[in-house]
Amino acid sequence: MIPADTAETQILDLVVPLDSRRDCETVALLEASGRILSESVVSPLDFPHWDNSAMDGYAVRYEDVSVATKAKPVELSVVEEIPAGKSPTQTLMAGQCARILTGAMVPTGADTIVMQENTQRTGDRVQILSAPAPRAFVRQQGAFTQVGDRLLSVGNPVAAPEVAMLAAAQRSAVQVYRRPRIAILSTGNELVSPEATLQPGQIVDSNQFALAALVQQLGAVPLCQGIVPDDPAKLQQAMATAVAEADMVLSSGGVSVGDYDYVDQILADLGATLHIRSVAVKPGKPLTVATIAPGTPPQLYFGLPGNPVSALVSFWRFVAPAIRKLSGRRGPWSAPFVTARSRQPLKAGGKRETYLWGQLYATSAGLEFGLAQGSHSSGNLINITGTQGLAVVPIGVTELAAGSTVRVLWMGHDLQTT
Image 1 (cartoon, one colour):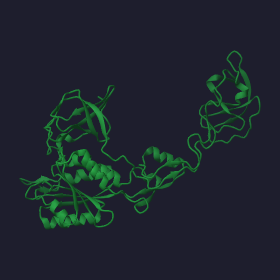
Image 2 (cartoon, one colour):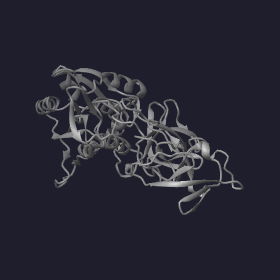
Image 3 (cartoon, one colour):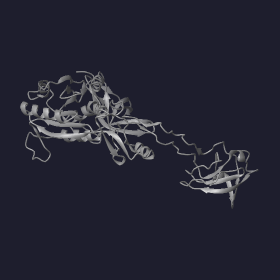
Image 4 (cartoon, one colour):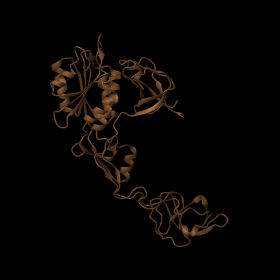
């Protein structure tokens, strides 16, 4: 068994990301959310595009109003009104100003905005009741970024803020990495599909669906291969097919030390190199990680445990970082941990790093972890629903008292607030 952090490092070292020239496609901007950029995006414009007003008020020459006070206001002539979207037509001369609205272009000759709360208007004259700071409320052309500046880099995930920026930069389409293809298969004579009539001794294959959902959440494409019986010939054929079709393969079951656990031997028969056979975590000790080279670069194969919670924990801890790197996303790729205070005591055997599932709460004192009620068994899917984080009890520790600070693998879901 190797420690979890060591296993994660070894796995990430084995991952070869998609190629930014070969493994890319162009998508419309409305289809870009959730994708990973395979190109850098530079600005074709200055932002702001021109000097504009950050306030409703009056565009003035600072030298005209620098001594204005409520007791001795400065009176100016209003020569133009400039709403947002309209280009100014006047150049301000001494003693003149322009009525201006938020976002509107500052006219030539003006260098400062006086907010309307500090003015008093009568007809086409306005009194300035207090002196503004020089260049007050003027958003200067190019202050945010300038033509040729890099807006986004290769490996940038695209979410709503990036879509907004790309739209503002007049990009109607962008180049992104293709979605990685992840083959998923479940092994075991006892498994049946959800629609089957369950017979004594049979188990519904939940892993296929859980792993597919997790793969989709990471922006990859699941290629579900179905259930493969514990037959070496059929399993070898299914594994070879999965390797040929996908960028990465996930199988569940068949990686422990039972009489029907064939995955490791078949991988060796297929010419794979086995790098990891087990990790010092609970749940999820049986974990096979191998590379197999039907082409270049070699593909990563994960043999996950068959117990459903073990498969989920193994995915969150080890597979998700690998998919993040494979997809072309910029690092860091490691499992995201946060620090929280545990609301309950957390118990473990002490021999392996133990993961206990529950909810994260955002409180005024910081994050708190609430342990899920019920059995924390590797076969119990019932109380893992709603999981937002996995609290880690380190190797050598059998109990963390309530109120202890604990490291939590955060799923990224919305936090509780009570």
